Length: 205
Ligand SMILES: N[C@@H](CCC(=O)N[C@@H](CS)C(=O)NCC(=O)O)C(=O)O
Image (cartoon, rainbow, N blue to C red; front, top):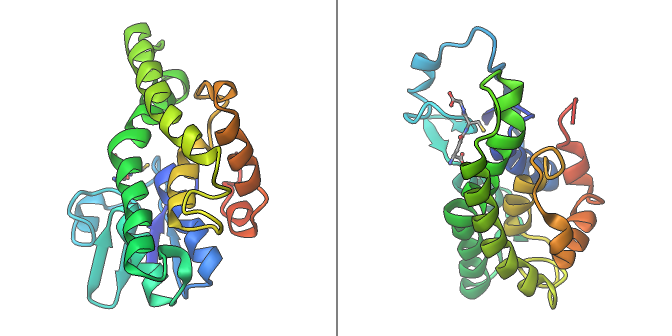
């Protein structure tokens, strides 16, 4: 299998962590955003033109959360859950990440970190205010859940943990107000001790 990634990208990191966790036989192809890469040709792999994307023979798959599920299934890992209810619960949190937590985190990541890095000017304070409101709203849900659960899926690490943790990898420069959410902070510190998470750390993070 070939996986198109850039290690700096949170969307790619959640998949890379699963590759390391499962020892999936994957060859990483690193895409340099600033370099020469034929994005038009790449649309044959992922029509959205976004990474991560996976090629497994003639099967091509985009969307980080879907790729994670495919890798967990291919490696017969318990990361997706072992029965219908645990699988649905993991999927529920991955959907929540994509619909709610990810977009709120991404607003702050863009305004407080990436915009400056890409020379796109100062943070827009209205956007930051909106991003903070949304982040606090969604983080409160996760924090309450983690007050009585070691991992998001309960007692052991699942895809849900890697999906959501990826949005916190730039918590400091993105100015995510994590101090207000002690259970998330504690859980994330625990994720940072996992080998697969450590191995997926980008070179300059
Ligand atoms: N929902 C997608 C988002 C993927 C995404 O936004 N990828 C970014 C990197 S973080 C990308 O490929 N950007 C390249 C571009 O916008 O041209 C996923 O979870 O895989």
